[in-house]
Structure formats: C-alpha cells, structure tokens
Length: 438
Image 1 (cartoon, helix red, strand yellow):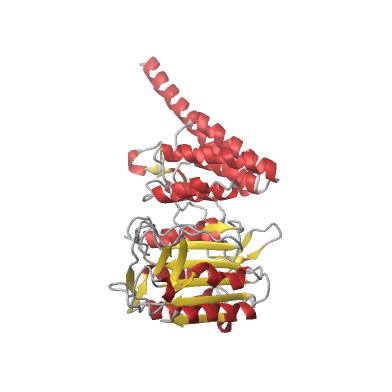
Image 2 (tube, rainbow, N blue to C red; image 1 turned 90 degrees about the horizontal axis):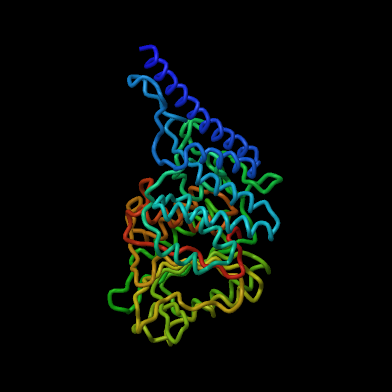
C-alpha cells in the first residue's frame, strides 16, 4: 500500500512539475513580449513548445477537484506556436531591411505551418498577408485572399498591439488582464516609438490635405444593373469621412447619376485644388467594365456594357491626381461579371501611388442591407462601420482593408466570418506600403 501511495504522489508531483514548466515559460514569454523583448519572448515560447508542443484553441483545465474546476488564464487559448511566429514578425518590424527580410520569411513559414494544420485564425491570416506585402509576394497575397474561409481557430492575443486587434475587428480571445474589455485605439496619435496611443473617443481632428471624390451612379440604362441605394451611399460616406476619418466636409465632392464627361471634369477640378502629395479617398458605386484590357466607369446614360463611348476610363480619372504626386485610395462597389472573358478591375495603372480594393471577387455580385431604415450597399456599410470603429484620421491601408474584409464577411454582425454572400478583395497597392495611411 505504501508503494502505491508513494507512486501516486510521485505521479502527481511529476504532473505538477510538468505543468509548472510550460506555464512558467509561457508566462515569461508574455512578460518579455510586453516589454518589447521579442527575441527573448520567442525563446520562452519555443521552450514552452518543448514541454507542450501543440497549440490549443480552447480552455486548458488545471488540475484540481472536479467540483472546483479551474481554467488556466481564465480560459485563454494556448498558443506558443502562434506567439513564437508573432515574435519573429514583431522583431522583423523593428529590424533593418536585410535582417527583417530573413525574419519575415521565417515567420511566414511558421504561420503557413499553422494553416497547413488547419489552425486558421484571423490573426494568422492577417499577419501572413502583412508579411507577403512586405516581401512583395503579390502572388501569395492573391492566393491567400482567394482561399480564405471562415476562421476555425482562436489564439491568445494578449501581446498583440491594440491597433492590430482593432484592425481585425477585435475578434481575438480576451484574457484576464483586460477583463474582456477591448480598448478603442486612435491610430492617429502615436508615441515616440511610432506606436498607437489608446485614447478616449472624441472628435477626430481634421486634416486639410485629405480630399474625397465619391461617385455613385445607381441609375443607368443597362438592364437589371441599377443600384437604387447609390445616392444614400454617397451621403453616408460623406458623413462618415468627415465625422470619423478626419476629412474636411468642404473637401468631399459627391456626384450621383452623372455621365462620363461630368466624372472626368469633377476629377480635374478637384485635383486642381489639391496640394501636391495630398491624399484622395476615391469611391465609385455603379457599373464598371473591362474593354480592350482597360477599366471603365459607366455613365448614367450607358446602354450597352461594352459601349465605351458613354464611359470614362478609370486611369483617366486618376491621372490628374497621380501626376501631382497625390496618393489615391480607391474603392469600387461594382458587380464583376465576366463580359467576353474580362472582368472590371483587371487593368493595372502604369503610374502613380494607388491602392485599389474591390467590393467583390471576379464574377461576383454586390448586395445591400438595411441600416437605420435605409437600404445601403454592403460594401459601403462595412467601410463606414470600420471608420466608426477605428475613429481616427490616420489609418494604415492594409489594416483598414482587413477590417473591412472581416466586417463584410461576417455580415456586420457576429465574431466570425462567412455570414455574407459577398467577399471583397484586399487592397492591391502600387508604390504604396501596406502601412501607408489615409
């Protein structure tokens, strides 16, 4: 009997010591990461993996009486593999280019390994896309965007930056440190290290060099192509930009149901008023086409989907801005059916700093929802909600694109994607970095 009791006690002590080993190194990693010691934190998470190798998306139950069940860190996921890769990513963000490239590649390998294991969290996808952008791996970015499904995994987000969580819609797991409360981040205010400062909500400071051109052509003569909510979208966007994104109301031009000549004239007039190196938010709702390898915006009088005589070329609208060094952040709420094997959005601009985000994938349609009693385009609704959530005059385009992506995929309600029929693309950047702000 004594041997049996001794054996049981020994096993219990071994289990206790094993638990102490992985929890101790995990906690050490969290502490080092919060101090910005990313290399040290990674070593701690790698040590944790040696004790307990696999990430777990659910709560870890600690030893103890069944009647007094205790959850480790209030039910947080266990994520040493994810956090070890994240430490590489953060170390890369703070390193010189040559070293950063190596760190980003290693981080990408580890994030990709998690997806291969079918551990698809929105955080893993977010950081992978960010890395691909920094490594100029556009093919991998496009492949990742095209195969993204509903996230099926949760990770520990305790050491993620507040602005990262905010950009992802604050969808990560909460931990005991914040009591489940997600802080609101004003990305426009940064400390001496370039990190966003958490501030209470309030008026967003206006930036005089920010302008917007919003064209909503809901009416046209193309059978079945009318978008009756376009005019309301224009008003909603203008209010959102001036209230939540720091755009002066007087700098926002809205056009509804206009022809090609009016679109081009408005672009030239607005560009003439803008300072060099300014920022333009461009939004088009309506019908677009790709004819002869060129993208076109349909005018209100367009009757045939391939009749470019009633359309204006997309690049002609942008040229007055790009020739002045103005950064253009363009968003298109445009159906993308195949017409003679071509899709709107296939033309690449040849000059200028331009970001372009489509409201739907190739072959996709656009949808609308009702918000406050009004019919609103789903893409417009997602964009204005993200502006409201972030509430800042300085938003990194990649973060914004991801936030809109998840907002529209989850149908604007809920914590996981997949509830919407519409899947937007992510921003395609030309001579702009993923951290460019607008």
